[in-house]
Length: 153
Image (cartoon, rainbow, N blue to C red; front, side, top):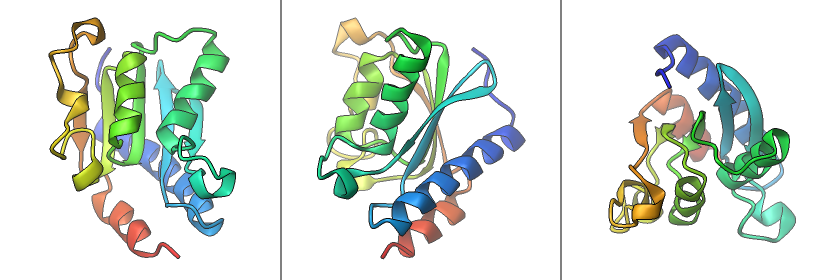
């Protein structure tokens, strides 16, 4: 899998920001996520924990759920995830289980983040069935993602 170009990363992140605005406008945390395969967006996820009254409706998990249905498989090792916020610990488990190898992130989530918290599940090498940790590229359209977070109702 080759890394997308920076211009492509920004275009993908703009798509995630559009999804995050939908979440924000309906009262959810402003997070949007997409999965890309072969340079094409194959699924999207919009944060929906409050809307659905179910904490598992995180944007990253929704994008993964949609991708597995679309592709008819659970191995997403040929996919790239793009998300406005660093995946949380819960999402990180799901990402590792589905073997996503590259994650593009807007801003860090710190205390509950999958790589920046005290529980960096995305970086863990001790769970051997997961294989190698994914590559993480952070800070893509960071300012725009931060502003979106700060505009949250």
